[in-house]
Image (tube, rainbow, N blue to C red; front, side, top):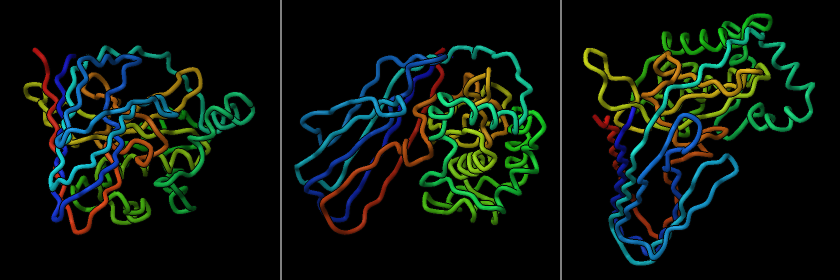
Length: 289
């Protein structure tokens, strides 16, 4: 599948901003089964220069600063993406307990994956969350099947409700109130998996905006989306979408990987000003016929 992707962010400030420093994490990955072409960033007011670099997780980040006074900031990122068919890895029935043991007893593998086993800024857990995880991730049963059961449980028992949470809402609250958005469901799933000693990471990206004829639109379209990736021995990193209870395929576009949202925030910065501001985000993922 080929897509045209456009992600527009518009900030409106009550008082003029005289100095703005920002970092973007919006360039789709160009690896694996995905090819990113014709990537372009347009910023108003126009910065003197945009710098790019690859971060620790292999994501491409862009830095810019604006030193002229402005009351609006518009950032438009566009690109063309081709998502190829996933290479299906042979199924490995390895259990949750066997996976944890294998990783922890292999020094090189443990050093590589430890980052995704530990708590992070938005992913923490306690015994209550571990008990929730144990209903699906049975120690002596298949890890792959357990994760499928976990994302089905989240999809079935939790309500997708935009505005019910924000980035600072603890996942304990999400677990208790049984509602949230893709970001919350991904953080919850990752916390459950890590609580069992299994490496899991956060995936940011997009879902195709226009569904195939006769198919329903998926939750998370028309905006940035999030799902998870779990390390399974011999299979490698396997992706799961708890918001839509599915294994991501050609309709999912990957922007970045990280421990949680803090590592892959689409746009974050520092402003020198006072007063409130509003932000509006518009996303279009259009298939190329």
